Length: 50
Image (cartoon, rainbow, N blue to C red; front, top):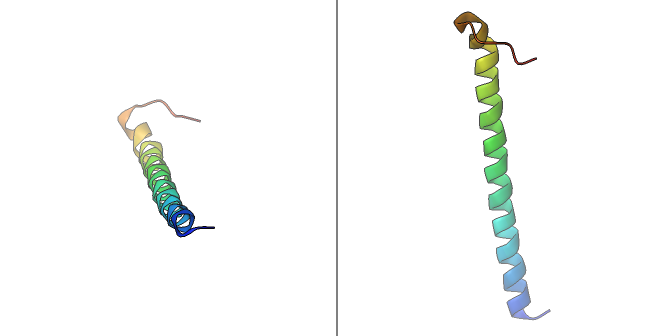
């Protein structure tokens, strides 16, 4: 593998970890919002999700 290939693999891995981190943060925020809705929703008269 040439040095250009190695550089491209390193850059690809860097961006793959960035994208995975973004989706994990998005998933965690979705869980937080769902948990808040589950706890506060009945007190505000909102319908239950499950």
